[in-house]
Length: 147
Length: 217
Image (cartoon, rainbow over all chains, first blue to last red):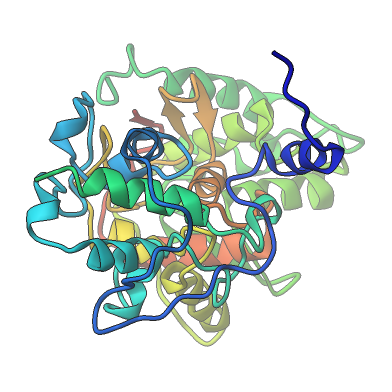
């Protein structure tokens, strides 16, 4: 069966397909205490989230151990995320990925959904968050499976 | 691998540098040896004091820059390209003459401005990853970044032979690797900002023995 897709949709895929996230304004969000309780995008998909977490766009495993992934090599700069769903709520996880610097200014953790207040960003990444809103929802969904 | 000169690949660049040291270049017909004679005498300890201010131009220069100034002023020949085999070889040869001697950098009225800028750059968070040099190399050295042990970020073994590169390379090439990693704007090797950073790192490494040519993973 042939699925008809509008032309503008193909254009969108071509223009954004090679970038981590489409340029443009970020989805706004509200911080309540130490959490972002409202999702930034459609409900996350845990399987996709695992791929994002293990991939080179996010580089999560460079610093964090996540033994549940089965990855052979993982860093130890940041805390292990093993069983993290038992320690942090969905909203707490979301804020920690989006912009942990809001809670700890000196953190070594990059802000994954922020484009302001950065300096000397390479042209290829300028104005773009490290992950898209949907990718963050997917990662949150995956982390929530780590009981 | 580094401590055995027969298995240290960096020694190939030192040997090539020795040859270049003896070879006349440019309109002057002079070689490095014409003025400096024996490098083992004249160059001993020099690299422990670099980067240093060049009195003629009031500019901060590293060993690479000093070699190119000599080529322009005394040999009347064009500069070597930064990161060229020739410049890496001569730099390795010159720095090698100080192997085992402690880095000895002093900050004074002449180089203070460069030092301050270098320290600022070292501590400034940059790039999409928003990381400073200090966050990895002061606060997290010894830990694992995936499989790599984070170093203390010292420059006292450069030029090095790096297994990842399968080649020799300069400290500035290594700087560019880090900038790429944090997704920051790449500065050119030999740029003023890299020289400032090199000065700060040399000051930070004072007392450590020069190791040129180092071998790194």
